[in-house]
Structure formats: structure tokens, C-alpha cells
Length: 255
Length: 252
Image (cartoon, rainbow over all chains, first blue to last red; front, side, top):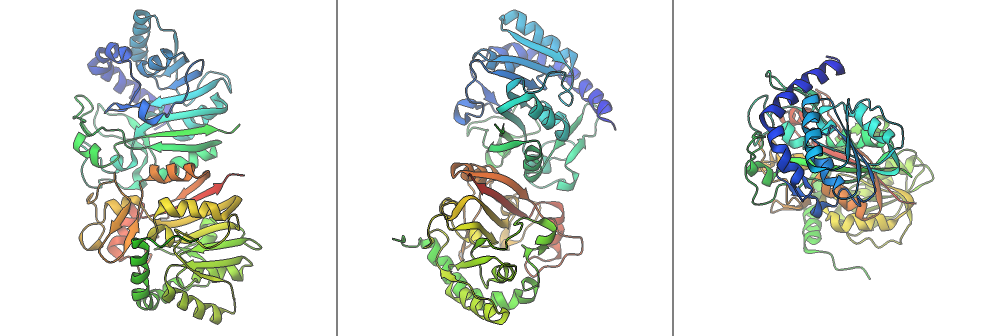
């Protein structure tokens, strides 16, 4: 399938997810005083993945309902969010009006962003482009959009968690798919979309190939008292306490 | 003054002194080929090109064993030093060197505490050597100290995923036998080996001023044979990353 067809399918997935979950969750998410990573809310304070935010130009690639960008806007960043799903952007704009926070939202794909080169200090993706777009395309776009010295920070499912994921159902405590099956994964089932997942070596290669130096890989995000997530129920908290369920990559563009 | 070797380093020294003869006998033909090859599956360096040109460079092998790698690099024009924690292994190295007509210094020490001066090497590397049997929290800083600015650190070892999937009897299978968090020292009662999570390796490199250049995860061919892993384990390694070759460079 083409990237456009994948995008269409993913838009359907997120239109449905927004109706079921992300829309009603958005107000609380926007209101959070903390910056938190992933399904178990690992605090940014413990990672310092993002660095200073005041006055920074930030692009969020695959922003969904915009809550992550909102957290950064509250800290003085100028945030632009791009997403392919109109329903989620509608939610984002509603929350923006309610909160009075100043963010800009664009409908479009992180694989082809209609914004000029070198116009951002920070590019972020939290389960956005980081799993829903082709890394060869969106990493190149992120690098293009960053100023020299700018930083890319993204959260995705860990390689091990994807290798332990059956086609349907919860992540298992055993390897379920080969690394050769990573890359583009079309999950079966009508409510599922198309994701991209890479091995560690492949992430490092695609980052380096796009002029991004690897600074950090944060893997321990689930706190000891984590409980199963109510909506994203494929990843048991018990699993996430023992193995890396999610990971945050940090890379910088050369000066 | 060199520090006293750690208890783990002394145990590993005794282990290698005890098992070296048998090890070299078992793997002699497999790892004694005419060209440099990496790891369990002996993937040729000419395919991976990790080290690049070594002629005229100062190269240190950390955990050289019988120096099969170092001898080939010396024959390619590198100025080589081989270090190993086991005197018995270095005895095999001396024999092989004599047979190959090359001569270079061999150092008997743990890679956690190397009796060589700062910034004296262009390349520090090993292939399933010191980065398996020495504590990375001591060995990465040592390797960095020994490298000149812009110098290259390369090492291969089994992967963190292989450590997680290692079950009873050191057999690897599909079950997650060991937690990923908390990996560091793995003690099987005979020897102590070390493994870190991928992110922890990256943190350690960056904390020592090393720029990460590559992580190669070699995949065996469908019919690959090895004196280290059997056919069942090869099929595992066809499906999941069994080895990591890390490549990092010291800042200018």
C-alpha cells in the first residue's frame, strides 16, 4: 500500500479513537501541570529529555489532540502541531479556545510538512509520527525543520515490546514476531492501522543518515507502582516493570 | 598505580586460564580464518567494514585471546597491542604470532585497568572480548582514556535481547527469562559476564564523550554454522538480534 493509503487507514483509526477516548481525555490531559511520557506517565523531570523550553520554537509531529504541545506552550514555547486527523485537530482547537493557550495546528502529514527549513529548535513526537509515519520520511522532515543545534525527541513502543506483540491481544512474555517483520507493520483487524517500528540499530542509522547525533535513549518509563492502562490495554503494567515497554530517543542536529 | 583487579576480574582470569586450552582447541579452525571476521557467525569485516583502514594506525585489542584478530590487523599494517586478562590465552597468542611471523606487544591485564598511557591509540576494539568479561562502567572509561581524539571504539558482544532470552542451561529460546531492567552483571557460577540495556550503553558512551556512529546487528545466513551456537540457536539469531557491534568515536 502507498503512504497515502496508509495515512487514510490511520486517519480512520484515530477518528474512531478520538470518538472513543482521546476527545473525552483531552481536557484533563491539557490541564496537567506535569510533562509526562508514555502510557505510564513517566515524568519529564526525571529524564530532562526536552531541555529548556522558554522561547523555543517547537514542532509536534503527529500532535493528536495537542496536549503534549500544550504542556510546552505553558512553559513559554511557541508550538506548532501537525496531524492528519481532522477530528483530533478539532478537539485540539476546542481545548485551545477553552484554555487560551497560543498554539498553531496544521492538518497534514509529518512525512511532508508544509513549513520552511530550519524553523524550529525542537521537534517532538509522542506516539505520533514516531510510530505512525515512515521513519525514512519523517526523520528527514524533522531534521530539515530543525535549526542547527536543534533537538529531536520522540517516544515510541520499544523494539522488544513490538517483538513480543501478537497480531491481536496483549504483549506476551515471549518473542512473537521476527525482527525481519519490523519496519512497516499493518496490524490485522478493521480497527487497526499501519505502524513503523525499527530495531535499535536501524534507529541509530536513520538518525545518523539525516544528520542527527544520538544523545540518549530513555527506556525506563513505567514507575514501580504503575497500573494497567484503561484504554491502551495491550501492555500490562507487570510487563512494563520488567522490560522496556516504551522508549524516548533524543538526538541533536549538528551545529 | 594500577588498581587491584576486581574480584570478578580475578575470577574471570582463573576461568580463562582454566578453559583456554579447550577453548582454543574447539574454535581454532572456526576463528582462525585468513581474514578478520566478527563474532558467533564470523561475518567478514570486508562485508561490515566497521574498523575501516587500519594500516599505520595504533590499535589496541581488549581481550585478544589467542590474538587471531590482532595478528590479521598486524599483517594489514596496523601497529597492534593485544591485551588479555588470561596468561594462558596470551601463551596461545604468542604461539600463533610466532607461526604467523608477526610480533607485537602482549599485555597481561584486565581491560578495567590498562597499564598503558592516555591517548595512545587510534582504534580500541574487541570481538566478544573485554566488553563481555569486564565491567563496562570501568572498561568504557578506560577505552576512552586510551583513545586519541577522534579515535574509534568498536566492540562486538552478544545482545541484550539474547541475555533476556537466555534460559536454563544457557540455552536461548523465545521466552523472556531475564528482566531487561537491571541488566549488568551476569554470573553463571563459573564466569562473570556483563550486559547493559541499549539505552544504558548509549548513556555510558555519551557520559564519556563518545559519539555514537553505529550499532550493527549481524544476522547469520540461513545455513551458517558456528562452533559457538548450534542450528537451533542459529534459527533464533536469524529472527532476533543475537549480537551487537557498537561503534563510537571520541570527540575531537
